[in-house]
Structures are given as structure tokens and as C-alpha cells.
Image 1 (cartoon, rainbow, N blue to C red):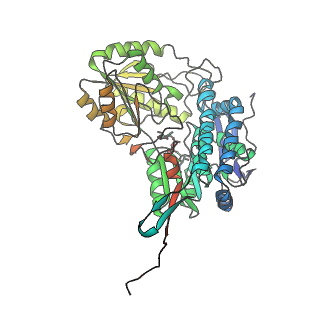
Image 2: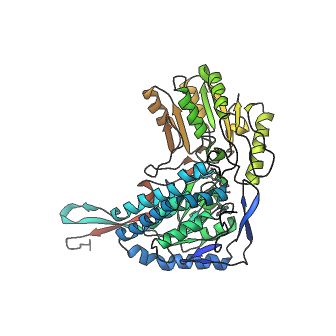
Length: 486
Ligand code: NAD
């Protein structure tokens, strides 16, 4: 192994690595080979206690620093992440199996963008002055919430650790972050870098573990806010547990997003959107446009051209820059995807291309293209979280809008058309938090990102995230004598 993938210790608490081998062991498996590349241990209750206590101790002093000081630390961390992008990308690839051609441009770089953006914003976070009658006025103070818990999924471990940590820290909160047990390595690097950049001990802590550790964090009374990236079933549990104590939440959950392609669209551009919206990260992207509605007149041309372009995918060793499709992140996820593909065939969808497991080591499967998919099929209703693209045919705008919105999810949605009036009408009609016109799946830090309906609560990134990591205190100031009726 050219890179040392074994971390110094399992957890990062109070500014240092901490080990406790009494916890359940978690073997980290490189998805491209199936080899164990590191071992960490789930946090014991004592470790969770140490992490929350450290975050609690550090919070008041961190919040008392000026926004300029906090922001400088975040921006320094962004610079370090960019300097180390290559090494961090290699680690991300070991953790997830995503090809280096992606991780070098979409993970540490995206994390650095969040640190830079919220670092730049930290000094601008202020309240407002509200004049009232008779000289009285109100001013508001934008205050930190306290200790925030971040819980991550396994598809973007560096990015998720930063997308939650950067706005939380900018607002003066401290964080305890629990990465997914499938990808425990990258968040430790984020913690290391933040502290190297000057974040005081206890400001950003990482603990490992499965759902039980997450649940312990969520229910701790010292925790003011929980931000989860994960599936809808987990989201419901975490949201309910947080609600019991009226904690703030951000829920970034799953989706089954529609991508509508009208017959006037630029065909190759629309096919690029469908490829980016289904096969990037081997299909393990929450916002993927997995229900591709194609207007009848262009459907066969679309399928033919898409199948041709899928021949250009380079499936293989994720450490080779030319590779565009890596393995699934875990054997379990591979089995889930295979199960859905079998169901698609059994329920009568036409498998145009791919969908076969690739023999040998590693969790590889060919990207799958299904045609003749109908709205009631399992592959059109449930989130698969793998490289499975379903083409559904439609005739009219009215019909396709009703079908696109007929889902309990509402994370993302996209439309390809040359008709600008129609494009804006369609996105206005989408029941989804993140919409695209003539592109798909971009998530710049400047733009709010999040879901409607069962896909989530709150927004990450952009100025909108600030509202989810801070609260407003109202201060009424009287300039007059206080009077009472008796
Ligand atoms: P998951 O729901 O199985 O796990 C997510 C995290 O929650 C893990 O860290 C897990 O350990 C933890 N967890 C599980 N049970 C818990 C509990 N009871 N209390 C607290 N924490 C608990 O999801 P996953 O399989 O890791 O990730 C895939 C899912 O995440 C997909 O549904 C995908 O769409 C979604 N996702 C959403 C976004 C988004 O931004 N909307 C981004 C990436 C992934």
C-alpha cells in the first residue's frame, strides 16, 4: 500500500487523536480490492462523553472570538486542504472507491470551498436594528446554538464533514462529527487540518461508530443541533429523537429525482446531464436524477446515443486517472443494487445495457440503462443509490409534471429544453429543493442545497445555512419610562 491508510487513532477529541480499543472494531475496506486497509474502533460511551464534554468546554471561548478570527482559521484550513488535495483525494478514494478523476476535483476541493466561503462570511454575521415608536428600538443578536452534532453518509466523507463543520464553526458553534462506519478515515483529516489551522482544542471532534453511537450523540442533552446526511428511515429516527428535546435539525436525506428531457433539447447536452445525474460516483449521489423522463419523439434516439456514450465509460482501478467508473462503496451496497436490477427485469423493464456484476476482486458493477420503465415499478419508486438509470416515456408537459411530482421524495429535479418559458414554468412546478435547467447535479457552495418532502429539512451551503447554525436573540430597548396599568 503506497499510502498509510491506518489513522493515528480512531477518534479526534479535544485537539488530539484518541484511541480506545474497547469499542467494537470497524474494518475499513478498500472497495476496489475488498482488502482491509485500516481498522478503527467504535466510540465507547466514555469516548462519546469525552467528545461532547470537550465540545461543550470549548464552545463559549470559540463563540467569544471575533468572526474575523474564526474566519481566518477556517480560511487557513481551506488553504491547507487545497495544498494537500492530492493526498486527501487518494485517501477519499481508499475510503469510498470513487475514482481519483473525481476525488481530485470534487471532495477536498469542495470541502475547502465550504471552509473558505463560511470563513469569509464569519465576520459578516450580525443582527439588525429595528426602530420602533417613541424612540424605542429592538436589536437582534445572531448567536451560536452551542454544541452541534454532524452525522455523515459514506458517499462524500470529506465534503460532508466540511459542509457541516464550516458553517457550524463560522457561527461560533463547536462540533462532534460521526462519519459513516463505512468511510471513517477522511473526517479525521478534516479535524487534523482544522486544528493545524488554529482551531482550539475541542472545537471540531470526530468519533467513530455505527448508528448506536449516532443515537447517543443525538440524545445527549448538551447537544443543541443535529445535522444528518443519510437515508430517509434514519432521518425519521434522528429527527424524532431530536424533536423530543426540541433540538435544531438539518436533514439531508435520500431522493428519487426526476430529470425531464423535452424533444427540443440539445440531445448530447441532455445525455451529459443524464450521465452526470446517474453515473457520477458510481451512482451513489443523493440528488441523482434517476427517473429520466424522455419525450416520445426523441426517446429511441436518446437511448441509442446514451448507450453509445456509455461504451466510453472506463470502469476500473480508481487510482488510475483515466478511470471514470469505480466500484460501489461496499459489498452490501453492491448487493442492494444487484437486487434492484433483478427486480427491474422481473417487473418487465427492458435492460438496454449493463447491470452485470464484474467478476474479480472489488465491488464492481456495470452501469445499467433501463428503458420501458413505468411509474409503478420498484426501480422507479425506490432510491437505489447505484448506477441504474431508468428511462420513462412521456408525451405532454402536464402529464410529465404530475408524474415527476408523484413521489414522497423531493430532493432534486431537472429539465432539459430549448424553450426558456417552459423551463422556468417546469422548475416552478417541481416539488423539489434543488432544481436544474439544462444541467444536472452541480452543488456549488454559493447555492442552497437540500430537499423538500421526505428528502429533508433545512438547507446546507450558501447564506441559508447560517440560519440553521445560529439563532436570533431579540433585545427590546426602551428609551421611555416603563408604565403599567396599575
Ligand atoms: P444511513 O441512513 O444508513 O446512515 C447515515 C448515517 O447515520 C451513518 O453515519 C449511520 O451510522 C448513522 N445512523 C444510523 N442510524 C442512526 C441512528 N439511529 N441515530 C443516529 N445516527 C444513525 O445512510 P448511508 O447508507 O450512510 O447513506 C446513503 C443515504 O444517504 C442515501 O439515502 C442517500 O440519498 C443519502 N444521502 C443524502 C445526501 C443529501 O445531501 N441529501 C447526501 C449523501 C447521501
